[in-house]
Image (cartoon, rainbow, N blue to C red):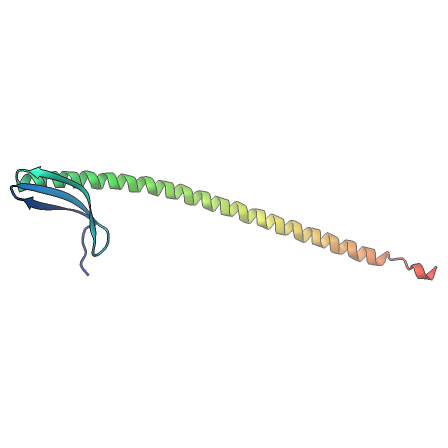
Length: 121
């Protein structure tokens, strides 16, 4: 399987002028143009523009990825905290329910001992 870069540039000649494109690899078969500049007099100028723009483009992408990573980390921490709170609340509820059931069972047992037989009077 051929490995290709995620971002790259292409240089094309249209009659007497050159154009440069910054491309992004969408899938193995498809790529899209992220940025394009036409009207360069020479191929060298087009390559120079493309390499400079690609470096800036990659740096901007790197910063955006870092911001998204920070947000994801914060979001995951909040989700873990919420899950821990929910688990603690559920454990407290189950403990309280078990306690109330035990008290109800004790009360039922004590009521059985204090039963008064009304027929024997």
